Length: 280
Image (cartoon, rainbow, N blue to C red; front, side, top):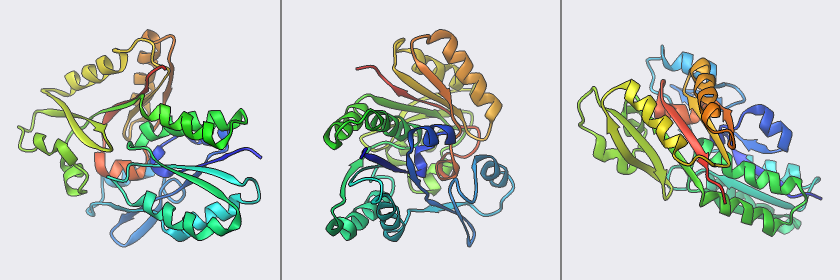
């Protein structure tokens, strides 16, 4: 039986990829006030960003429970005895801890579950998951699937230009990018993920320059293996960025993807970014 891949909804992988590779996605929960909505199940990207623009409530998020993970792992037990469960950085969420509790609860059933802290999030996590899923689909052993994920972790970079750091600040996920706080309003911060937390990359003066800088960062390695392009809440802009990148990166698998509700809580609308998987 093939190794099964489990991840969480912050991977932001498009549904067609999840289905193609048979990846199991455990949803986080997004709250508007007291209303709880499962990310990607009860609320998708389009509905989330539309609501974000009109809501008086600042949304918040919650990690999946250990019970939800237990149900997922036990549900896969009929298909496999080996699972690789890959999740967003433990410095940003307690999701991995919930998965760890669930693994301990089902350990007696002969199910071998390998947990991986990706030390990244969103489409960076998605690229790590995709590499593991590709290995699993070829019939690779548990050890080789884990190795594929860890190799990808060393080669993934995420860059995002945000309109404001306010969502990250209020959500408590700003990390070292707090050094950008207090900048004049016209400055557009570009942040990344390093060692599992949000870090400052640079500041630019206009939205147009932010767009160009993201493009420059995305194309600096002309032979990256894979790349996801995104603009939160704007499918047309996402498609346009992906098309522009494809034109200059003929050897890179460039795909558009929407950032889902959980990640959107911390980035807000109009964030523009790329996740890059560099070659071996």
